[in-house]
Length: 421
Image 1 (cartoon, rainbow, N blue to C red):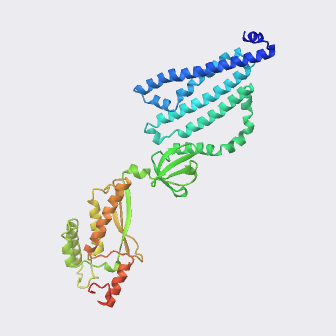
Image 2 (cartoon, rainbow, N blue to C red):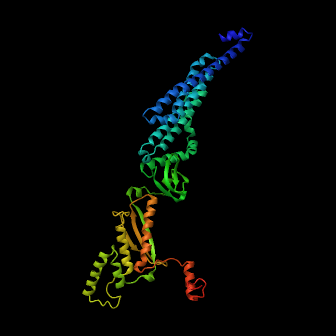
Image 3 (tube, rainbow, N blue to C red):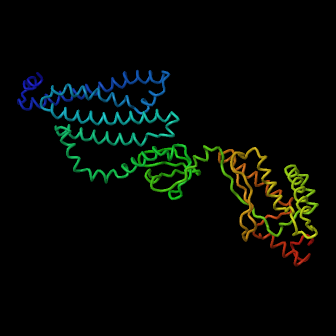
């Protein structure tokens, strides 16, 4: 034996025993290290080659999360555990350390496996409706707690049951430490059960400065990528306790609302003159309406013997009314407007800025950029055609307006007057 050999060199029996065990321990460590190198260079290389060259995709996620790397860490640990009896002096200590090490490796292996399961799950469309990251985080927390207890029990040489029995007394402390996680778990269950938010949803929550697309739902937080590419992190339970806007319904409906007004200068509103009516009859979208309406009004006035020499008598068309009908017909014939949803042009209560003429309809494209283009095209046209109906649009006087007023009052002597040289 190694101990007798060392004793033959003049060492005392006790010194020879400890030195022999130390040398054996170093040999075991060397063998374990060699086993680890062989496992990584041979087994892992073969696995990597097979996984990267087969037709399956799910095992690539296991490789990326290093699940196999962590499983192979068990090989040197098991070798060390099995050879521990060769070192009588340190056998108990070695086996306890290896047991604790195996508990930790097992926990991190399971954690990596669960992460890869989430990666695989996210390749399916259902992951946007029912994300599982929060649940996986709960399982990982429980796994780390159990793994820690088992590792401590292994180092102490006691049964894990003894340590588990003491957790009841620490429940209050744990509930404080993991308060956010517990709230997040409850919130995650409610969010999933009620289908309140999904990955890919556009949500708006001004309290947290969130206005963008949800790209991650975890145990404690929901991450939103805003339109300016900043990221807002919202506590999961805040989506339950506070109100927020989810625009998913708008996307699902296939229509996005346009609700905007133009302000008409009320001093430009008047009855339509015969000349204006003749002009407007040449407008394709108004011809049928004007002809039918003129016959209806003429019949009404004739039937009731209305004296039309006074404009307030009887019925007559107004430029604002004809303009409103024109806009409605324009929207009805616009291919970018949804015809199966509410479409109207209405007058709101007059204000100090004039008479609001509101367009209320839905664009049939919910993509933000396309929606803004459709809306802008509509109001480009509305603002441009209003003068054709004898209407003036209201806006606050600008410096140019004031300059023109002064120029007209002063006359040609004003430097900015058109006739001034």
